[in-house]
Image (cartoon, rainbow, N blue to C red; front, top):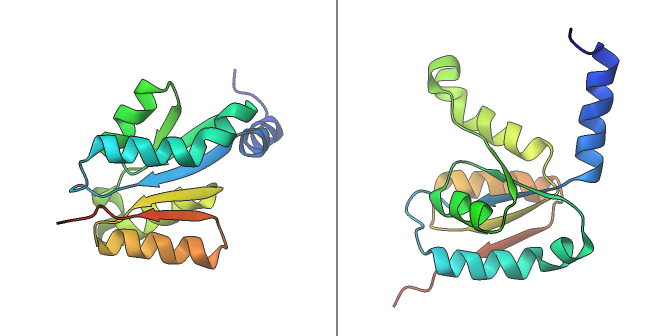
Amino acid sequence: MQPPFLFCIFKQTLYQKFMFNVGIIGGESFDDYEFCQEKCIKCLKKKADSGEPITIFSTGDRFVDQFSKRFHINVKNFYTDWKTYGKMALKKRNYDLIEDCHAFIFFDNGSSDISFLKKIANDKELPIRVYKKNVI
């Protein structure tokens, strides 16, 4: 038996209200796990210490999965559904991801996808941290 429709809306609202949702986005070529871990810990320490549950919103980056498993943090992956949405798939995925996010941590590798997400986050006035790996 399915729960009533209003219960589903109430449950979703509670989930959004009592959960800190942080988008951690890095791009496929960003693969320095130690660097990413250090920065994520720095950004999330106060939230974790407060006891507020954290959920990571991700685009499926490997380092995010590794980080969430290591620190037992829930992760919700947002994948690009090219088959259903065609050329609009990337844009739809990004808007879906950002809809319930409270903050973002970006590991910027110059990707246009990351630039697009940063612009949307800025437009929504969400707190963001942007890290770039120093290349020597």
